[in-house]
Amino acid sequence: MNPQPTFRKQLLRLVIPITLQQLLMSLVSISDAVMLGWLSQDALSAVSLAGQVQFVYSLFLFALMSGVSIFAAQYWGIRRPDVIEQFLGIGLRWGILVSVPFTLGAMICPEWLMRCFASDPVLITYGAEYLRAVALSYLLLSISQMYLVIMKNCGMAAQSSVISLISVLVNLVMNALLIFGLAGFPKLGIPGAAIATVLSKLIELILVLLVMRKPNSVKIRLPHILHIDANRHREYWKYSLPMFGNQLVWGLGFTMYSVILGHMGSDAAAANSIANIVKNLVICVCTGIAGASGVLVGTELGQGHLDTAKAYGKKLCHVSLIGGILSGLVILAVIPFVKLFGTLSDTACDYLRTMLVVCAYYVVGKAMNMTTISGIFPAGGDAKFGLRCDAVTMWFVTVPIGLISAFVLHLPVEAVYILINIDEIVKLPAVYKHYKQYAWLHTLTEQDTNHEACAVPSAQ
Image (cartoon, rainbow, N blue to C red; front, side, top):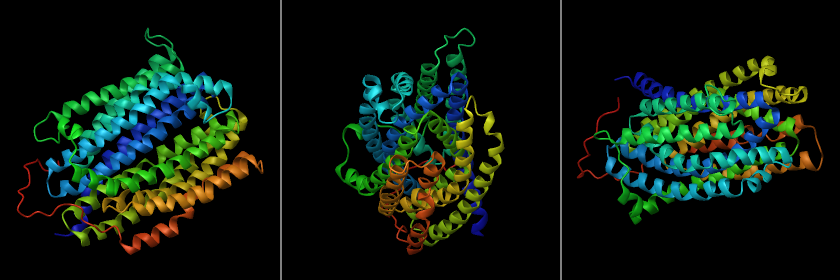
């Protein structure tokens, strides 16, 4: 059989639902920005900066999820749901533990957290209101998102997207009802947006648990959470720890960009918020390609098909490049419409135009690096390169440049934004060189020919 149609069919089967899921998540950010932007620019800026707390939390959670994803993809390739359940238990245990300090911090000392991202007292007050109300969602996310990762890797990507769709629709509707007080609901403003988020994540968790009850589905088993197998635990952290470090290095560096711009005034913070929303919305297809890369390559590696995995990696890199270029063109097409973004001041609109031009070239490099560093490399257990690469480019190049340009040289906002967004382009040569060395071509599964694979339904 010609492998090309098979690859395309598998790619589309994964890219479409993962892209849809990312798009839906971006729509929530857009709804928050649009609705809060109609309240005031300060409301938009404050909630955007408060969202950085969840972003930092998501770095920890995503690293834990990525470790689970590596083994889920490879063991699904040889149909071993029993092993997948063990790694799911490890991920859930650590995910819940990590969510606790973020939940308590947002509830008890949100003002202190906001001072890390802003100096304006108004932004701190507004952001603290949001954090108190949204805190519970962190705990809910630690369970629902972990299982959604399992669904993506175990032939249920479409179902995971349906759950995300329902969650997003709940969020959008409750946003409108609670922010503006429509249909008899109380007008809560900023806390209303946070409560809408908590309700949507609660619905998401309930739906995930209902799916888990279906026959032959991968189960969340309490013994695997409370009593972790020591060998599995060591194996999990052997490949997850570098990804954990990579997420923290990259994510905290990215958070520093928001810290820098947040301390350059409300106009800069608001423009950066809108630029990030547009960028994240447009790059959803590239995110879908990166997510599909991990599943496709990981499944082939799990079965020991190294040549096929290598061929898939090459095709996925080509697809991601095309996706990145198209995403950049779409961002450029958005620039004439910046005045439509809520109640932005003229200064903020000027900042936003420049930021969107920068985003147009940024997403090309981002698309390539996501597919390789976040998709192909970890699929074979190779996460150390991403840690080294991001540590150098962000903490020895862009973060120091951003701090110096903003607070020592006092350069204009536009110049600072350009300088802090060169990281994805700077690391491309090193990423390409590492890819061509094929250090990521590894099988992590236990190739036990005496073990009869557990009966599971084939991917639909």
